[in-house]
Image (cartoon, rainbow, N blue to C red; front, side, top):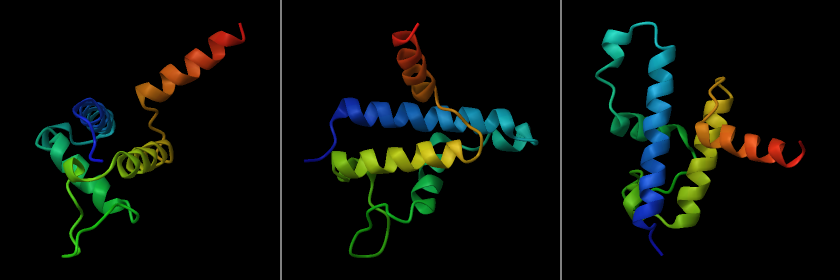
Length: 103
């Protein structure tokens, strides 16, 4: 089963957030303004050695992968970001929810 429209929207929101957080860290903000969410998504696909590839050896479009494959890629993005000191809002929200259970 291919990913749903809502799941794709969630993925795109994560990619935009990664782009925005990288922009905040960029030394040359003027040059970074030209970096698009699509180029960030493509770069993350290239970094992920486990991202699905087609018969031609090219990384498959996220619109054509399964929900499980996208979930695995999102986990890669979370780890990629955390290794670079970037915390995604979705992780902050999950942490806050978990902490509020124990207050």
